[in-house]
Amino acid sequence: MNVLISGLFGFVASYFLLKLALIPSLFIAIGGVKMSYFMHLLLAFTFGFAIGIFYFSSLWVTVRQLPTTQQPILLIVGSLLGRLSIAILGFYLIMDGSWQQLLIALLGFVLARSILIRRWKPRTFLR
Image 1: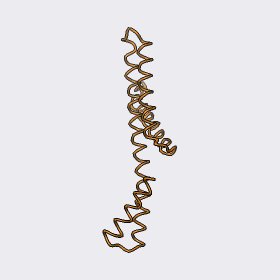
Image 2: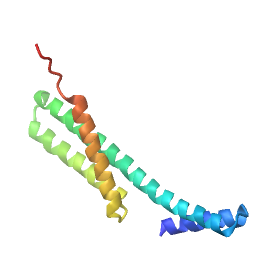
Image 3: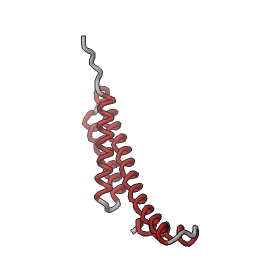
Image 4: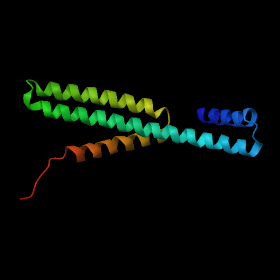
């Protein structure tokens, strides 16, 4: 519904305010609708990527703290619950009732995982 409203605003602005002809105004309205949908997907990807960075960075910090903690089970369970709660809430807010936005956000999440794995991979040198 928001996409239709943004397209309507684009048409009204171009036809009535800018005094463009009918056909160019319709193209502007259609372009605004497509751009609005594209922007929603781009934002979903970006926020999914940010959730992935948060999730896997927090996991990395948890794993690095395990040797020094007195209660490793409490650390593991607490970290898991915190990370999952924030990630699920983030995906729920990103989704906004659209499975396409959720899918794009999950792609960003997986990309963040791949980048962090490559970055944190142990360096091995051949001798």
